[in-house]
Image 1 (cartoon, rainbow, N blue to C red):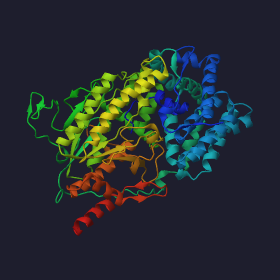
Image 2 (spheres, rainbow, N blue to C red):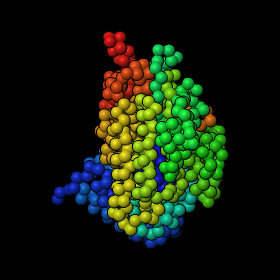
Image 3 (tube, one colour):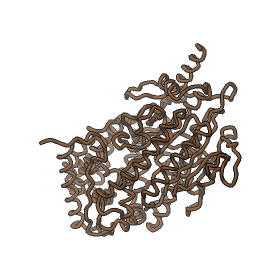
Length: 628
């Protein structure tokens, strides 16, 4: 589950972030790609996407630059190349040049490494082209009827179980889309950003404007597409499918802590509701507190279960983020999150229907508050969900929380050198805190790169040029990266476990931290589903060591209810759970030995990835202890 801000703007932006990128210059890292700005004719989004002449000029300028980049650079990352071709496909669709759009769709299909993505890429576009040929137009009743016919036929040709999750997700997203929702998202989430930026914007914002126009025009076949996805799911009911679950037989749950040694596991995340964990699974700090300091005088203002830092990297007394800066109540937000998850899984629940009704009728002026609060809840619940997975089935686990906090506002505060120094110090302090508490395993279900800071600088209107923002972002990021790297490298007795990311890209190319760190005491985890197949979202790369279940994993949210979340954020604590059990069985294991036992248990899947197998790993450990 992502813990950065979720919005229509960042979704569209992520679709076009690979925008920038005879002898070609080889590109092996994202920061080698050029950064450019363009001048928009207006910063009023609705005015711009409604003015074809003005939008034509924006599209022509960005398109020329994209094509030039492809001629100039040899980009070594498939995900980034797909981003380029996706942008060019978008532009061709804007121009209603559907045959050219299809050529770019085919290039994306060739680069797709995940089966469902490869099978479904371009189907909507193919249906549109076929329907236009029949109807002689791309609008009207005849076109819409033909589009529905061809879209169904194209999907029906594919073995449905290979694409079920994709169809469920498309139906869920489509059911919440409407002109009202799109306008609300523009007014509430995109316009405030343009108000900050003005008319001089990063080049990918130009592609975003074109994308908004194309999305709005495509709403004419929304009902037909929704009907196709519904029909496919009705014809292939999930209850008739016996889906393989490889994890149940691999899992090991200790019934009691007899024969086990307590193991302290750090959950470095967005905060943990310690009350939902069993009492025996909560770490208790026995140090004497004096005037907000422990007896070592380190200045932590913490409770007995961990330490917390707020958005300004100041120490905070609560390891669960206070619900102070939201409009909706927690119960409402939990229900809306559940409704969103149910829609994505094609579950017809009261929460799903309530969300669908609410968001499609919500006044555009209220969309910003709703999305900010929904994003806030996703981060608020994230750490508790992760902690629940980490301690599941291990009564010897003692969870110790370290809370970090992100802004979930549409326009977050800008990064600065001063803030980076405070954050760097928080990294150093947290790792020291873990060491003093005797932590053996730390789960880190978060990651970011310098490009995140470039975006934050841009949306805050900071920097005269894109190059200037890139240089400042690098300086800010380097301060934090170096501090985190040094802190982890210096804690050799702790095994750090992190999620690779949910962007379907390369952690190495993006230079994510901590996922991209090459250290002996850190491992990076990708996500697979219940069958052990790579999820559509999982980030990959050479730095990804193992894969674990990250699809619809059930765990606690604050207050004690249980929900199913998906993401590498859920896969990573499954491996932390295994590591915690290994240390509980044998507390004398070194970090290298614990990794070795994880490695000994893995099964290499048909996709060539290493799937953890807790039962095999723990059996290997037990056998080695008998031999000793």
